[in-house]
Length: 155
Length: 314
Image (cartoon, rainbow over the protein chains, first blue to last red):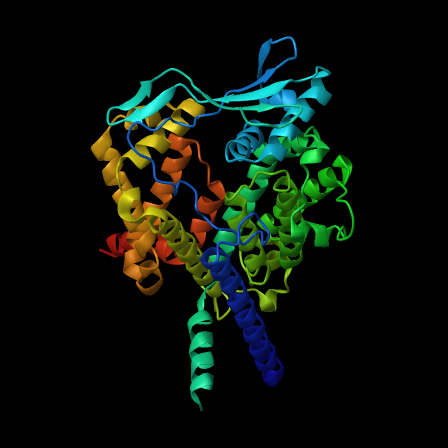
C-alpha cells in the first residue's frame, strides 16, 4: 500500500513539475518575444500604460469620429451607431490613425449598413485637451485625419 | 547522482515542500467566489454586448478555433444560446468549486469553460488582460488538493480519511509559489515594456499625469484628474510603481518581504481600480494565494485563545 502511494506521489510530482515548467515557460516566452494579439491567451503580455507621454501632448481620452454625408452634412458617430462599445471604436480609430485604410473603409461601410445613409468621408478629430505640468489644459479640437469613402484617399 | 539529477531534485524540493492545506482551501474559496460574483454581476453584460456586435468584427483567437473545432474555412460564430450555456456552466462549476463539491472536477470544467468564454469575448478586436491570470489560476487549482479541507467533499469523506485543519501536504504549496512566480514575470514584463522603449524617459512625471488625466476624464474620476495636476506626486508614484514591479520577485525568496509586497500590491491594484477605473479584481483574488491564512489564523485567534487560557489560569 505504501509503495502505491509512493508511486502516485512520484508520478504526481513529475506531472505537476512538468505542468509548472510549461506554464512558466509559456508566460516567459510570450512576454520576452512580445507574442501579442491574444494568440497564446491566457498567456499574454502586460504592457499597459507603458508608452511615454510628454508635456503639452494631446490627451487621447477619445477620438471624436464624424461621417460626412454626400450633402456636406457632418454627423458625430457614437460607438453604438456601429454596433460597438467604447473600446472597439477606440481601437478601430487608433488603427485608422496609424494608417490602416481598410479599417477606415470598414467603419464607413458599417455606418452605411446600420444607418442606411451613404457616407462620403470619415473625419477623426483630437480630444480638446493637453497635459501640462499643472494638469489638464483645454485646447481647441483639431482634425487629425480625413478619409474619403470612394477612393480611400487621405486628405 | 549527476548534475541534471541534482537540478531536478532541487526543482521538486522547491515546489513540493509540505504546506498547509488550509491556505489552499481558503484561496480556492476566495478565487472561485470572486469568479462567480464577477461573472454574475459584470460579465453577463459583456456576453449580451458581443451578441449585438457586428459579426464582421469577429476574429476568433487560435485557441478558440481549436476548442470550437472551427479550424478550417471562414470563422463561424457560435450562437448566443451556446455561449449563454457555456457562461452558466462556468458559473455553476465555479460555485461548486467554491463550496468544494466535486472540487477538482468542478475546477477543470470551470477553467475550460471560463477560458473559452474569455477567448470568445477577446475575439472581437479587444483584449481584456485581468481575466487571463484568473484563467491560469483556475487551471492551477484544478490540479491541486484544494478540496481536502473546508469543502463538501471533506464533509462527505469517510471519518477515517478526514483531515485536521492543520494538515499539510507536499502538493499544497506549489500553486501559491507558481502564481507568485507568474506575477513576478507579469510585473517584470511591465517594467521591461516601460523602460525598454524609451529608457528611463517613462519616469518623467508627465506620463502618469497623462494616464491619470486620460482615464479620469474618460471614466469621470475626479480624483484622478486632481492627481494629474500634481506633477511631483505623479513622478513619485511612477518611481514607486516601477520599483515595486521590478523587485516583486524578491518576495519569492523572502517570507519577510511578503509582508511588504503583498499589502503594497493589494493597495496598488485597488488604487488602479478606484482611481483609474482599471479594475483587476481577478488579480486581487489571486493575491489571496500569497497570504499564509493558517499562520494568520493561529496568530490572531489561537494566540488570543491561549492568552485567555493563561489569564484564566492566573
